[in-house]
Length: 193
Image (cartoon, rainbow, N blue to C red):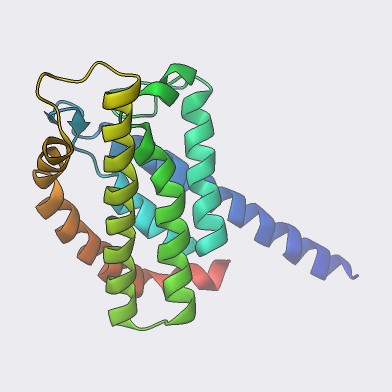
């Protein structure tokens, strides 16, 4: 292996690590940009938007790794989760399912655009990823409230989904925007990866 090839490979790995760290940081910002808005037990954040972009721009593998890094940073105690929270106790939080879902959001958004790199596929990938986020996160939240967390009086499966109806329009609009932005930015990012 030549020196130029080694240097190029090291440069590429360094850029990958920078991109992974950048999306972990964007998730922390997105988690707390509107930390004062909470509906039921669900904070209104921009995390789904950034998780979708991570998958679309970095690819399924690197995008999901960036979400794993974000989760581990928060579990280590750094206050990067919504409401400036962090630590191992968040594992028991009713909204921790959303944090887990971001790994799958990034993976499947990236996988879809890797297989079908068209503008329409980017938007579809973002919408599918949003559906994954809602399905996983809301079901986790319902289970957490029913099994180990103090549920509000009269809490039901329908109430859990009713809470999610409030951020749904925002998340659908942001998903479409993430798909369109991702389609425009992907060629630029790919030049450097």
